[in-house]
Each structure stands twice: as structure tokens, then as C-alpha cells.
Amino acid sequence: MSDLEQIKVKARERIWKSLAQSGTPIQSMPQKELELLVNAILDGALVLIDEALEEAGLPSRERDALADALENEEKVLWEGRPFLSVLTHYQITTERVRIIRGLLGKDRDDIELIRIQDIDLKQGVTERILGIGDIIIRSADPSMPKAVLNNVKDPEPVHEILRRAMLHARKRFRYSVQEEM
Image 1 (cartoon, rainbow, N blue to C red):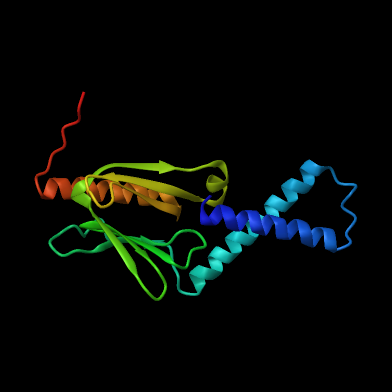
Image 2 (image 1 turned 60 degrees about the vertical axis):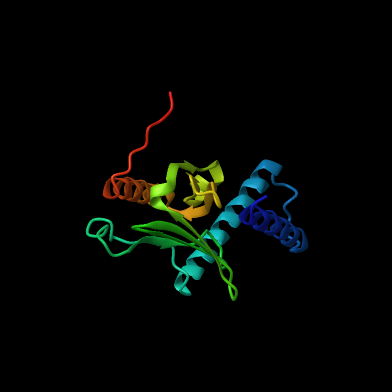
């Protein structure tokens, strides 16, 4: 179970407990409507928390550098963090994908764009509602053959930035991939 799923389970339990302790007569409401209400409250609260994290200086943003970038100097094309995460940060540059974990101590994984073999986007129903998704990267990097950028906000443009950067890196280094049939 991912960190976000664990948070949602705990928050949902807390909302149910608060409703029960509030003395509000909810017994007359059908169970399905109560569950919809609790889920709506939870989704609204999670979006509010994520917006507060962005305002506090933990952004999840797209950079408009792809058009003029991709020259000799490495430039950041996009950087962000997983939804509701303080400990993980992602960067897509003109040369690599960087995953940075930790608050005080830092753990950094780099995947060179030229080594990326496949990029996929995965979104469940709840993730689509929240506007987040997972970007799955498969690479020829022996230390990290599969990496997942979890709970990326607005994942479709990020997926496209990564795809275009990968194709440009291959073109720049005259690297071609032949698929097996």
C-alpha cells in the first residue's frame, strides 16, 4: 500500500470517528450516501493540504524550458514532488531523471535519458479525480531498471516532457533503438 493510500485510510477512519462523536443524527442517511460524503470530504481535504504544501514552498510545477533547452548545458525541464509528499522530489533535466529522497539525509537516484527504454502512465479512478498519476520508467540502468514517479500532479504533460526529452537525447547522441519482433 502506497503512502498516499495509507494516509487516505487513516484520514477516512478519522472522519468516520469524528462523525460518530459529533452527535449529528446520521443514522437516517443511507450508507452509500454517507460513504460518498466521507470520500468527498477526504478528497477536498487532501487537495487543500496539497495546495498548502505548494504555498509553503514545496512546488509541483512544469517548467517551460523544453522549447529553448536541450543544448549543451543541462537544464531542468520539470520538477515536482509526489502529491502530499515532503520527503521526495523529482527532476527531469535535459540529461537525466533525478529522484531525491530524504529531508536531512539525501538519497539521490539518476536515470540517464539515453538509457530509458519505455515510459508509461498509470492512473486509477481516484487518482484521475485528484489529478495525479504514476509515471513508470523502464531503463537499461542496472542499478534501477524500473523507477516509478509516484502521485505526480498533472501527469500527462510530465509524461510528454519526459518522452520528448528522451527522444531528443537519443537524437543528440545518435542513439537508435531496434525493437525485437
